[in-house]
Image 1 (cartoon, protein in one colour):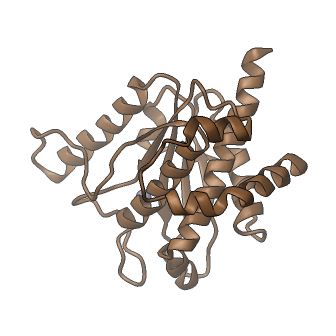
Image 2: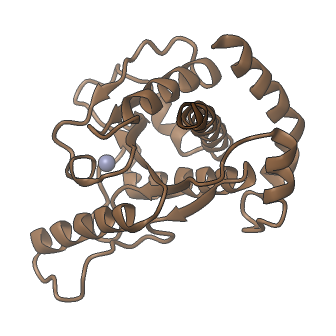
Image 3: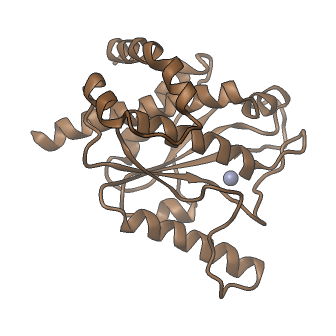
Length: 243
Ligand SMILES: [Zn+2]
């Protein structure tokens, strides 16, 4: 496990400046070339990148006063761009600060229900979908920090979560001892039919982590780790499907 990850990270460092330069450009012209160089097996997967919350639903508010929905979107954008760079088809559930409820929804709870239903529908209607939902954690005690990955009950979700947790630990925060957990009460995770994980990238209730999560370089680091995690899982998944 450790050697291939180190190898991947080594390869990625070679391409890192290119990647970072291209993260906001929206250019995906290098996709097939880079996929070929990296020898990955992204074909057949579409990573549905979900920036949690949006619009009136800002999610949690960080201790420095920033809405979770904004941080989610920044990390999701970077993740989406990096996954595309790795050769994956990708789909962002939202690309701006907006929820995606139907026009007929009126009350806040109707809007929230419609928004979640539509997110589920996007994942379920996308062939070869793998859902990666980006969120931030919040707790009353400010001392807790660290990314944690939750998984759907669908096939291969736990494998994806475990790989993701390990990648986030080794690439972003080696002291993070958090373990994966089933996303038992999360509507989105309970209604998708594809592999899916929800990543709580860190704690907005922790002073230091709150600031890190708003930092562009740290967001890129998270995006790179998430991309590497998905890629490693996809390679294993392809190998299993071919056996
Ligand atoms: Zn959230």
